[in-house]
Image (tube, rainbow, N blue to C red):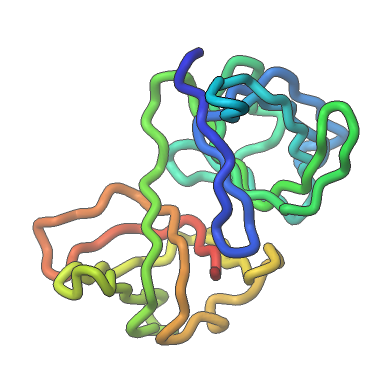
Length: 193
């Protein structure tokens, strides 16, 4: 696989997209780890690097439809997108605690992701609005999925009511529906930045 993703920093959280799963170990349906490989540039050369993502009861594991799945549903050769702690144990391979793992078959598209500022939160109807400061006409109405998760800057779960106008968030969501104004999408995971 020559299109492995790289690790990027998103606030206090690290993110990797298009990482290949090389091993899965489960202690229970939700705890264990997955070993992945991702690409990294070293001295103008791209190399593959291993990383172990530890999964706990606090790790959200989703499929490409935004549904929660068991860690044991992930198989070698699948592709994952993940949000994880920047605090790593420097073992072989290096290890980090995963907050979110989205698993998919090779060739399936990944979720859309939007980073924007919240302009309004409607607690009663479980939705919120964002806009892009670079393009104020680009407002999106996000409907919160039934099992959507919200994480604070440190990756800890927080309730939906922790969101407020002015907050910068990264939202993993369904495809944006452009036939409505404002545009609409279903939010599966909200990461506060």
